[in-house]
Image 1 (cartoon, rainbow, N blue to C red):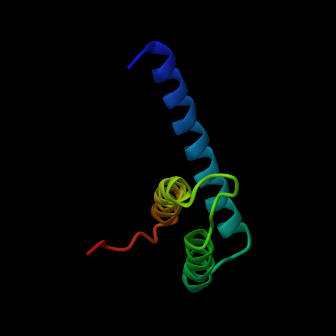
Image 2 (cartoon, one colour):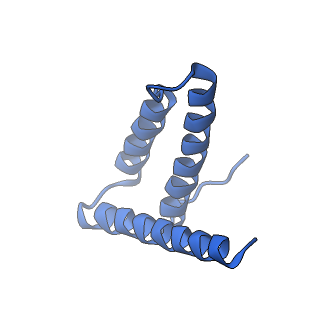
Length: 90
């Protein structure tokens, strides 16, 4: 990994942390119950599962959307953990 790549990765990790923390604060500020939280995140997951990227072939779109889904899922799990709602995986 080059120094430039390391700096970009560190920047991305910082942005992801701040985004997850913003969602945590939003859920706390609105008094979201765990059920409201899980329902909202379920809808996010369902919406992402139906997305395609226009202008590229379907196979490439599937690769991109799968990667996006994976990373959004990771962020949602980070928010769950920050809120103390992390569920056991398995």
